[in-house]
Amino acid sequence: MFWKKNKKGGNGGIEFVIAGLGNPGSEYENTRHNAGFITIDILAEKTGIRVNRQKHRALVGTGIIAGHKVMLVKPQTYMNLSGESIRQVLDYYKVPVERLVVIYDDIDLPAGDIRIRKKGSAGTHNGMKSIVSKIESGDFPRIRIGIGDNRKGNLADYVIGNMSKEEERNLKPVFEKCADAAVSIVRDGTDIAMNRYNTKNKKNGDA
Image 1 (cartoon, one colour):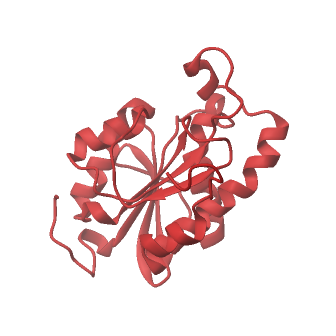
Image 2 (image 1 turned 180 degrees about the vertical axis):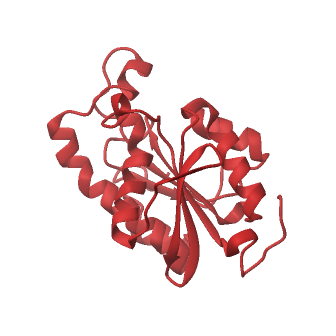
């Protein structure tokens, strides 16, 4: 863990960092792999935070969520190097690793499912592998957005493929819920957010 807990935040008073993962560039805007970016955009709109400053190899914006000063982050390093940007943000603002929230797509979850966890491994996601490696910890909350049901052909082609119109319609309310879940983590804590927003799997229970 980089820093001891500091309720007032570190440099600039930042208390929480909420990062959505994706790839920069217009060609990736509507891809499944950009679920994290899309959710950050919705969260920014809901909270009135403008994510438009280039800093720490990311697009960032700061504002208040539930009485806490929060930085929203969209790394611009491309997915596989997401950890380089996140490490810079946490180091500079002295934000404890447990106050990092990462939002990202998960091919291993059915499309539209939501899973929030307090901590864990990176799994198969390259962006998360980069983050866990660079900050040397998996002890931070994450919001996983399922994109897995309709995969056909090559995995890489699928995740960076554009969503169909039907997928967009189906996933828009899911992205909205994930944005609300991020607010709940800041306001209520991860346990309450998990109970409120984790999608129930009728066969196996929550992962």
